[in-house]
View 1 (cartoon, rainbow, N blue to C red):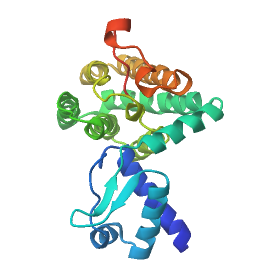
View 2: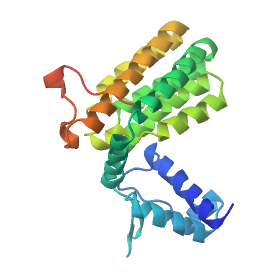
View 3: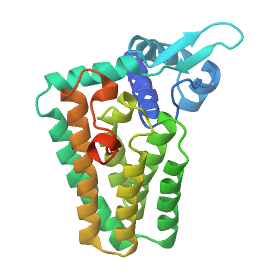
Length: 246
């Protein structure tokens, strides 16, 4: 692997961690030496990766006593994602069609193969949604539920594919006030968990499809609706429901 491709791979990895909410806006990345050791790369490759992420608006590099590399509020990458989706006709539907095919089958296998510990982990992911205090914690709890289903399905390949496909969609919650989708996400996840716990594979697939169709509607509203991120979706008062999660 060349130095250029290694730096790109490191940037892709860090970008994925940000998208998943494992490190969120305002949070500091580990110091350069420590992060390079964690990733098993030379510091020069890490510096180039950080330079790429800085150019894309993912991070800021600060100097001084509180210096370091911090995740931004992500406005620039969110706007770039939205612009790209607008120019790539059918891209959103293509990604969501793939996720529906992938995650409905995951829900089916989870209903058939889960163990008691899997149900506990899925419930903990739902409980974590009730305690979110920002966009990063929301994304992380949401991701943990979907990846928890893959673990319950006893398939490492499904877990990898789900994580990859989720990374193709910039989290829509970065374009919205984070609290809006929480209640509906909890309701959707609760229905999926109930079906899995009952070992009702058909209901698990149906509720997962409905959940992802909510995501499709939300994404299309964000991309093709109003230019103001805070007004692209109806509120509870105007439409009777909060926007869906991904």
